[in-house]
Amino acid sequence: MKEKLEKEVSSVRETLTKKLSEIQDKRSILRAPELRALYDRISDLEPQDKAAFGQAVNALKNELTSLVNSDEQETLEPIDVTAPFGVNVKEANRHKLLSPSLGSIHPISSELKLISEIFLSMGFNVVESREIDDDFHMFSSLNFPEGHPARDDYDTFMLDQKDDAGRPLIAPAHTSTMQNRILHQYSNNLEKGMPIAAVIPGRVFRNEDLDARHEHTFYQVEGIYVSESVSIGNLIATLKTFLMSYFGKDSLEVKTQPFYFPFTEPSLEFSMSCPFCDNKGCRICSYSGWIELLGCGVIHPNVLKAANIDSARYSGYAWGMGVDRLIMMKKGVEDVRLFHSGRLEFLRQFSPGDSK
Ligand code: DAH
Image (cartoon, rainbow, N blue to C red; front, side):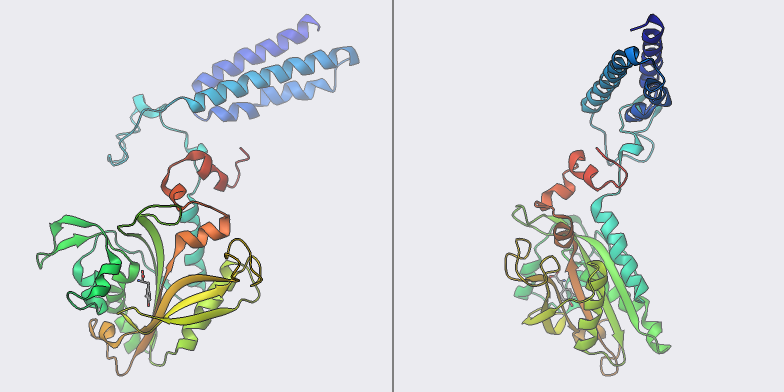
């Protein structure tokens, strides 16, 4: 290859290796205009120079790629994820953090946003749940009498701190903890002749034996609707409308079967026809054609009473839907533990513009 051409490649090599040591988003070097310009040069060259020049440019690209890869694999010093903002991004530490451009929205966050938007478009308010709560909201306000065995189904984590009644604070095992607050917060709606309609996405906790389908920390979306004349038909239609929108289907079959929750009467377990095989049976629905999705029912009068709502006049429905399994199904994720694993190779699969 002509000396002049060799020089062109080595000068770009010099520029880009220097640049690589200075920039945060190392991978962007592979899209550097200098490199692209070398590739563009190939078509203008004399036929006898093309092959050698092309090889030299490819070799440069490979060199840069392996520099980028080895930089990404370098073990990063652990950081204190609980530290106040700024501690981990001190100038001296900054290079140890991955560049924000390598990050992406977590699949749970993006799906919760989508779910919330669908319910917003259906007239529901969206309210976030809490990650520390008390016995009243977790149990008493939801018609779990003191010492009732149904409390055992919601075995979760307790804090050392106590509430005003001297009971330990609780990491909530369901988003139903928010029902009493929502009923209070929006009770004016009823006086104005408007319904109470809210969905509550939130993180919940349970004392679980962990496996591919069970996590100690997962997500639910609670729904609550109260007005003067509410029927189970309204509940089923609402959930069906949501699911058709979420799965992009024109039609879906749903079915319910009786269940028990202290806070609803009647209580139902709600299933939908598998949206991946249209009820024919596939791996995702374990060849049953149905997917069990959530618990729901007509709100127990005691739950309305606990929020000072006249249960003779008003009635409502509620549901609690596990979100992790829904997302696992939709995205083909086989192990729920991946969501909180912090594994970049898992998370990057959900990053829209990233082809890696
Ligand atoms: N909180 C229940 C659970 O986590 C789910 C549930 C069932 C929520 C029925 C509701 C409901 O609001 O009405 O198991």
